[in-house]
Image (cartoon, rainbow, N blue to C red; front, top):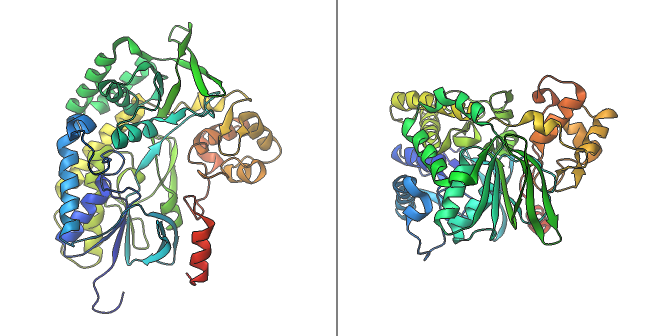
Length: 460
């Protein structure tokens, strides 16, 4: 930063955390740069359809419509007034020496920063199921994106399976939009779900809405199920084979399947930015480390689900806190955040309740049948993973180098958690954290060779 120049603060992500961070920085007199993969701000939770789309916000976001509209209007007003610089449909694929490599429709460019706020959000946490590698099997998040962005149901006869709040929410949204949901299969037993009640009681209205959604699903919803396999033909899924809570075999015909076990933090950019990580037993995943304000060192701040899975409301609070920390560190006036910090603690208690009620099925993942494909990108099976561990691969990066699991285009985002459970089980570890974590590598998103060649030719 040259003397006298305003500090350049870049925000990656324009969901609830990124929007509130931008709003706080603008109030502090800065003009932040916001980079986002979406065409319009809102993030995944408040994803907006294209311009001219006629469905009202109430149909897209339900009871959360007022919050979504408020966030959209806040961001649009700042952008229209020139109070921020917005780079839509842009992906950060690398971080090097205070610069971000950004891909957009025009190719590759480098954007430098003095301070960086990462509000990268979360993605589906998916566990392999025999047959899940077939076309027509999606993450719950992908199905929700199609519904919000295009008003499309991915399938005519849909089975949703997994666990967590999104499972119920998406089912209700699909039914409300006229989709045909054949079954909602929750692998978490009801007795386990009630164990998180004390934490869920921290937000009673939110919890009550969830129960009301369950009632709307009626007999479609089944808890404590065991997923045996997804039966497929050359066109995709034809049925899901599962056992109910009493162990009785069931078969539900379908032509599309949505899978998801709550969420996992999107942390690849935090890794490239040099943040420290620790394994969190509550969430059964590696999470970046930051202080209560989101400071993660080296001029980097983290906010939202990319730091902790706290949901949309928690992301808004965390975005304000990270931006306030940034302003303070720059010696600029910052808002009083005492109330926000108290609220974040409250929301954290609810999040831990969700984690307790809908835990990651670690034991099931560790015992996946040998023939189950774990890494869909590379076609690596559970049996091949176990054989890799047998000849010296008791660590996930070694498994990756020896057996290619996690070496595909998703860089392990879909297979890493299950693979770590398999590795830990084979190696006799007490925790999947002992198997390590896959190291982030650039580019963190698939990038066309032409863009990288263009960048190299320009001396980037």
